[in-house]
Length: 430
Image (tube, rainbow, N blue to C red):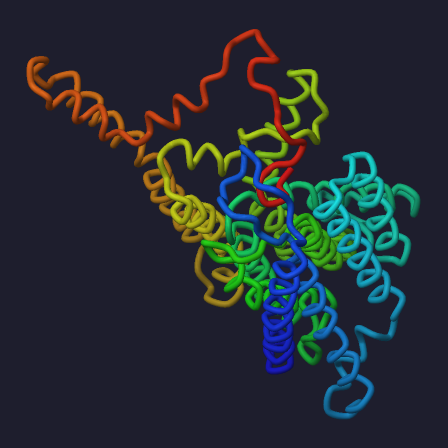
């Protein structure tokens, strides 16, 4: 654990320093797009945070490799990861491809087909070098061939990358959500390896997760509202790539025929946890694709109807909307972790984890829907106020949501009445 913490701190430090440098260079050379009607921010802001995050990750991987070569007696366990350097190089190579692709998109606005092709190539590189789904712990289902394994892996990675990118629309949103999710996932992989290999706690999935946590923690101060710099497509796609890869590095290598029922339940969690944490991004992704296809548009075209936009339109402030996403992420991810920790380490029933998730859902739902109740009370009070007095007009004017509603109204049946001004959503989201 000490080495994991040290690598996370190194990634955080390097990411933070590089974030400041990239931010200042972005302002100096005006490396930022113009403000659009759909944007939440009000001043030009660089979108190059993915560069700083990648450099932090690269520094931590380099330090881990250096430790494995210089201290083979004390840290011999680290060398296990680098016994197959092709996998590590493939992951870092794919990450570099995604960062370059994202930076090009943030600066020059690439078309969606070019971006999607680049994502498939990067995911294919990871699958080609063996980080792939060879089996699924679902009733003994195994992927039948290496070709099918590669196809399933590539599509899974691309799906997660785009799901993460779709919610990148508010300051600190993806950074905090991914930090919480990967922090919980690191704890799970670390505890799981303790059970399966008591003398070696070091593994590729844990390394990816903890390094990503460190890099995101270093970037968060620059990305916190009001953000000085966004992570852009480079950062969001990079986060999605590494989250998918770390999950595959655990789940995809499990042989369902070689584990018992109790171990099989534990093996489900690497599948459940990443997708449970990404329920909101995946839901947003699915709704956006359906919405755009029904409108006769490309599924990768932009609009202002993502879930984070709807939270703002409900009356939540920018910060409150981000914290609501954090809350949902924490409830789902920690709840999934407890379903493993409580029975294995505390000997208690997993029902307490379900109770935690249920209570958390209720609390998050109440906080999420609170502005609607407030608005209804204002509307009722305005209707009951005396017409002669100025109280009704005062109450009606006090509803700050009215402006948002009026802004959202679009003429029905006239696609040209509200033209899309730009093919890009706020902060690099899709």
